[in-house]
Image (cartoon, rainbow, N blue to C red):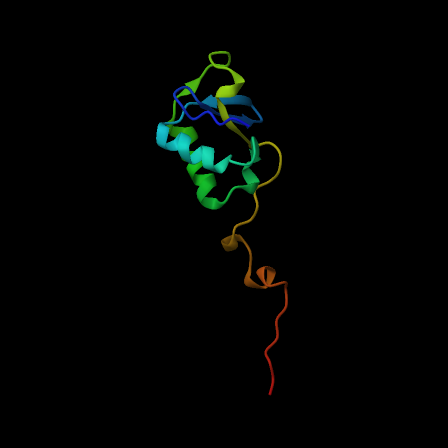
Length: 108
């Protein structure tokens, strides 16, 4: 897989409403290339909370490009918001769920 992070590289975002192509800044392209280093498509649910917030911020602040104004080799990666639900963060689960549901104290 060749990684294109130069000028014109875009992030593909898939939602229920269709696809958007986002043109991030150079710094954002570098970080996105790291997030997509092993995959071409990632579900929002597999991203860490920090990655999810970074992608959300990038999508909301970067300009959009029209389909056809670039080739598929210019796509850094695809974020799919339609596939799986978001994984719960540690703050969403109780401590008993994180530890397997039960615990006991050692008695002497």
